[in-house]
Image (cartoon, rainbow, N blue to C red; front, side):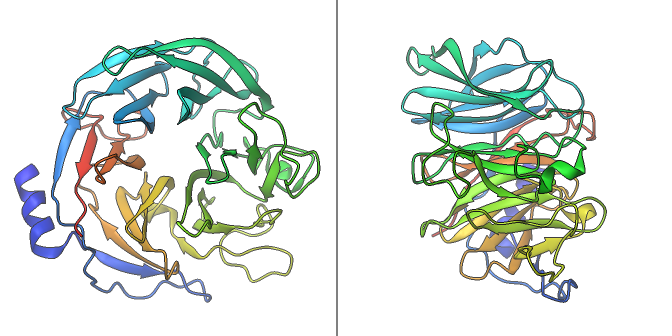
Length: 354
């Protein structure tokens, strides 16, 4: 399969089609465009157990496993070591050890505990090949948890603040309640406090009206983009404005209703289920679960996208830019909803063209 995919990449630039989420809510016919992805793909490592998130600590990748609660260290050559197991993780349904982020020698982890979702901070000790977790400090508790809609992505923005996506945990009304942390994107200091310049004074809430957001990335010009699972009609990518209301549960997808911010692009859930995302070379890359594809969205036209690797690796949970400029793509076929192939789950390395 690796040779066949590599031949396909070279021959066509890894292009399957382009999709536009236009104001009418109807996608345009697919069109072919050259993506500039030409470096081929290869397997970095395999046989991971329901992996969820990738974060780089220098040149070393760290990966979270949802159900085992393990943090793994993955070398560029595919060697891997167990950094540690996070205590108090209580996996159930979509909950467990979810998003991770790294900053200044510390690992931040979003996970499901017995009664809530929470964020904990750990010192990373040792050197690559022998990393370990120090004692943990809980910086935020009380995030709503359920077997579904836990959100779970965390990332540091260019402002050095920690952002977290929080799902509605099956309680739709919380998304419009600004006093609740459910159905929100949160912004906080590295110790979990509300920054003075947050849109709602004294609150961690940065935006609201979300159902189950699971992707975050910042364009070089500072724009924040977030991917979101819809219910039955539309999945979304949103351009996030401080204090913005993104409509759930009153609106799903592009509704054109006053008071709500429409997504910049939408897709049918069967073709999407957007999870982790990143950006490189003027494009956003968005991993899709049910849709089993990687989307490539130009930052200069967020209404368009190209579909890559459709069906080649199954469910895709996360994507990150490695220090060498390649993409590391995390499959997610062993989470109970996929159809695992031999070697699943895997990290796939994709080289990007100039």
